Image 1 (cartoon, rainbow, N blue to C red):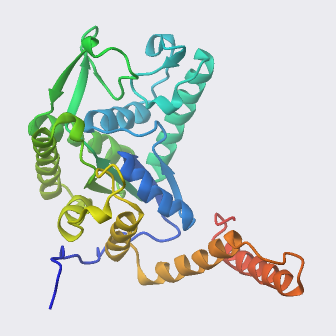
Image 2: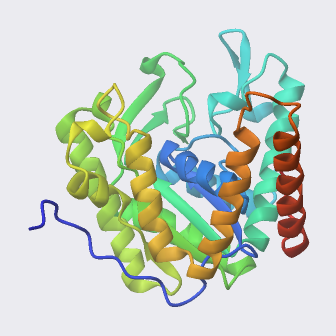
Length: 316
């Protein structure tokens, strides 16, 4: 007897992720969760060079600006609450020094461009369709940086607006990297601050827009992380204490499902070898100077050497 409904999954036929792949992950905090997994298993990956970006317009803006070679200058930053900020980036890039902020912005956007050019896979997680428009210049911002809300107008992106923004982004990506696979997913994190009904409406807009693209474009896929969370893991024991964000068990579950779809069985074997080494590195011995532990460390070094000989980017 089955006590759980499951989302049907099947492995992709083309362009599976292996240790020769180059990955770029963009979007909501769920991108960072999956990005951490790729980092742990020593894949070649870059995650959110501009920090967490929640809505499609912000992600598309970063990608388009990167490909077009935008250079950030004084007019792109502002001072608020004792720090310099940029409306295109997350607050983690903000800095007390304007010069440092501009240097970081330009370094990261150049890094984004390089990663787009060489990426085999770009994984994009959309979090919300709600956006804030700055009333001063009528532009949609990626982050408000705690600027008073009276300076913004809150809007819900329509499905056609999302489709147009993502289509333009994909077109730019394909113009510089025609072979890349773009994988969309919708964050399972509920944006309840917008309101429960408004969050559902927002997610519906995102999902509808993505599926318009998936049906029309080659090498554009959808991974159902949102559906897995809401259907297969429909229990609050899979959430953190805030009852909003998926906990580690849920993230591991969805990651395993992603592996099933996108990672080959041969690559999974290498991942197991990496995991053995990672656990060995984290192991804290009772007797660090014992012969047994020294032999353990010697064997661990040998395993690292073997993996590095196969994949030069794998360094522990």
